[in-house]
Amino acid sequence: MPETHSPARPSAPPAVQQGKRTFLQDLVGLATAFGLTAAAAPAAALTLPGTTQPPRRPGMEGKRFGMLVDIRKCIGCQACTVSCSVENLPPIGQFRTTVLQYEIDKPDGSMPAMVSLPRLCNHCEEPPCVPVCPVQATFQRTDGIVLVDNERCVGCGYCVQACPYDARFINHETQTADKCTFCEHRLDVGLLPACVESCVGGARVIGDLNDPGSEINRRMAAHTEGVKVLKPDMKTEPRVFYIGLPDEFVHGVAGQASVRLVSDH
Image (cartoon, rainbow, N blue to C red; front, side, top):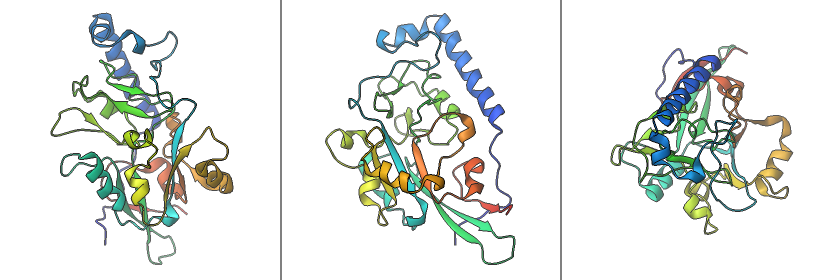
């Protein structure tokens, strides 16, 4: 049985999280005013006028990567978690992707529903982690993949605080920001991310959202009403999509611990 806690810790209201993000952006602006950012970042990555997002850096031309997770097929085996750790070697006890186990009480008193929810970086279209980085170590490629330049990162943790999906952490060994990268080093040579390749139930699919004929687009087209994202109110436009995601999780998932949720319906 998974560890349970009652009641679930609610997510911070969107207005609170937006305020935190604005505060972090103001701090970056202050650093820029003192010449800190300009000194540390290359000219190609400077913020464009009228936007909080710096220009994207080169990626795979013409592509926009996204991932689809079919929760109905996830059996919670943690093969993705293990293969990711073997591939990317984060410190023991820290993970770039996890599968959290949730138990939802049913209002009719019947047996609780058990849900396995894979979590990872959402590689958002409007990633809040990018503009808050004072040294522009966190950046986004033209194909949408969000990465961290560990040679530049100073471990300030601004990006960790700005992420509404709890997808980032400070690596205990490198003391720099760490997270899922969609295994971009594998994608660049035509391989699948470790978590997709090892998924026993075939619950994870990655593909080019710009290609109408890609498998990810075909699957989403077949489940138009059932495709959801986490925390849509944050306006980050996440590019990790879910099929079979219970409504209780759309706005209310927070933290990295297993929780007990009480269904409203």
